[in-house]
Length: 313
Ligand SMILES: [Mg+2]
Image (cartoon, rainbow, N blue to C red; front, top):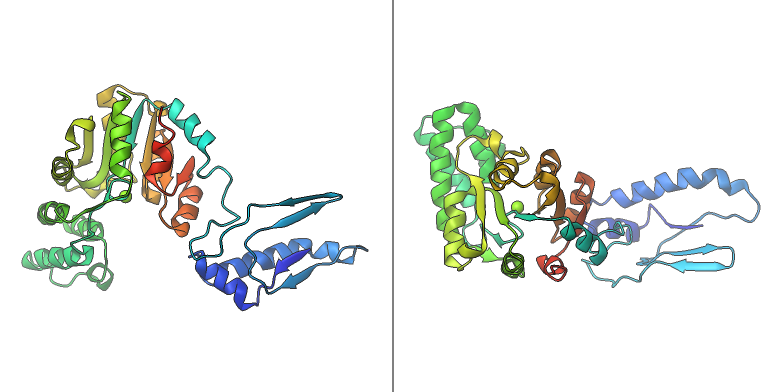
């Protein structure tokens, strides 16, 4: 048995390439070695380590040799440990066959909202709003955050008024960001392809409803979207991972959760889907996200919306 040497630079580099921290794969190897150790004393069995960067695995069972798919040796190569269900057309077709309503997250599968207006700039602006309201010294992790939703959650902890004025300012910045939001390759095509089937399409997002409508108008997509179920209230407790935005949309459309599929790029999207009882597809544009979304319980994971569009019939 041949395993990567957990102390070798190759194993460390592979772990870094996967975006899971430099010690993770070495730890997995040590774990496997401890399981195999009792076999070491059996005649004919040897357990050895190597320091080569391997991108496929070869198994021999008696006279039969099996190999995993070879993987290209570049940074974003697909990991051999990726579950077999990811990007599998049969799995996607099976999910879509049971899907009446397609629910799409906004920031991620459709566009990158803060592509042109840095999210950290918005965080700084929202902290200024808090300072104007007499809360001039938020915790350092809030001030340094790249996530405006963290400021909203912090404001909500201070009080209803604080949540309301931070939400109002955040909404204004989101609308401003829409002009420079970058469409996700294949995202608009997915919307149009699903819409062409005549089945409902709902955008479910923690971003503000008004900003999403602005985006749909800017890109001439409004007629393809049945409903927008997004942030209208300053209360962050109603946002994903809470299922509220999914369940209100499905109730309004009179569609059972089991007949809906939610496509999202965050762990909180998958958590919301599971809490609401819908099927879920993770959209992962990075290998690290793929592992996170699978671990969160996504039914499958895609690396581009196009993979899903291709399976719509
Ligand atoms: Mg998202």
